[in-house]
Image (tube, rainbow, N blue to C red):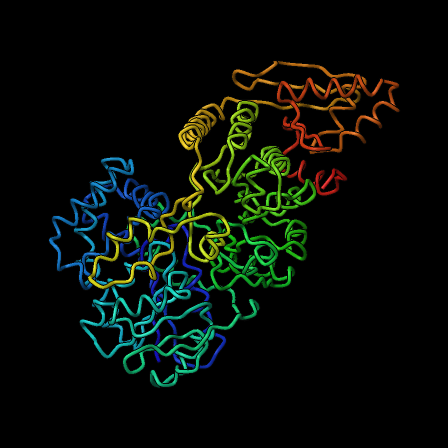
Length: 637
């Protein structure tokens, strides 16, 4: 079958879809009919700018807000929901009024609400135009990728295709079609001919060789209609080596034809993949995380392929910013050392575990990693234990210090309201924040969600959780009568089970609000906050200009100098005190007192037997020079 793969809104404008580009690349490796890729989200960008008659740069910001910040409210899906079966049975004016009220209740800015409502008006004509163009292409099968807010846009385009060409095959895949959600999509929307549960390489290879739907019956992961029900072939875990280097030619061709492509092109980051699954999740899945669905088993390409992959992508497309879609950086054989030694001007992004030490973070920066998403989630060791993060507050703070020192942008989130959270967990973070305003603040502060596939969802009783059905947004997204929203939903309303309520819930709510407010102040103060030090031959100068808590300029000599140095990037207190006492003849009691003084003024963070200097080294070298020094360091891991 001739196959067209479609990436609908709301994929990031600045990243070509790795899902369809990887599958499209199979056509150069396997025998079968051709595969083409359509970047529908770029088409939507062009169409919406014209419909709204607005400045393209202004709409790019609106697009990003809808696709990224408002995903949790279902905005991107709702905009395209008017054309779905069942949605038209209700009065559109009432549906629009109800959803607008819902967004305002959630604190969405009135200008954004107005844009959302107008985009709902624009969607049907766009969908019709795109469907006609796809049908005219003559393809026999149309496959849609559906991650995040792409499900309803895919369904809207799919039903428009079927209205024009009932004989064409419509197939959906991606995260929104993982088990059991894919089968729920087929039950709710009869115009969908098939879904792919799990990874798509085997399904796409089979599609390009198939002569009819009957040839797909035994392909792993494909769910087909059969008589009055569904016929399912269970998905298999595939080796990640089977995934080719993505082909982004179609994205760049469309970008070149876009009237405002110059707004997007300088910021494009090329996605790549070195692994699938999560090695930490295999060992001990984070309680709130449902990210990998049925694909938790960790598989990684040999690290030697990293340099080759990035060279192939950057040389082919002339873009030097890259973006790893891996859930987690490989522990060993991740290819970073070779990438650092390659001395190419490629920048990249990885999701990482936050307990990386100085050597590992130095290697990240030396390899061109300029942005990371660390799984920090909290600055309370007690809360981190509840979340099964496998790290402590000490690890997370050390990571933030290292990122600040090396110029790595750390994008992280702060979670609260997890089961069994205590007041002390919140209070210790409230006490800590004034001392770390020089470090990167969290992007968001939010309550823990219950997502499908997470331990909270799979074993709610274990955590005292009562599941109360799909989040409210699904009432607006899937409006049809008889639709099983519970089976379609990814995120769920929840509360504490009967008998688990706390007497101090009001006090806990007040603490969480204070934490949110304090993080807001952290964000405001971050740009002006400075806490750094410089080493001399036998002296250390500390510059502490953190708002409200700073101590100014301090010169450390002798035992104080050596003690401070021993806790830079972390050290064991007893070893540091013993070594400095032996070298200088200073009583250990005096050194312990000094550490306590430093902890009281937020110079040092103490946890158990370890201490960590919270100041950032200003060695007057460039970031790569400092990274190279750290790669050879012997600081505690």
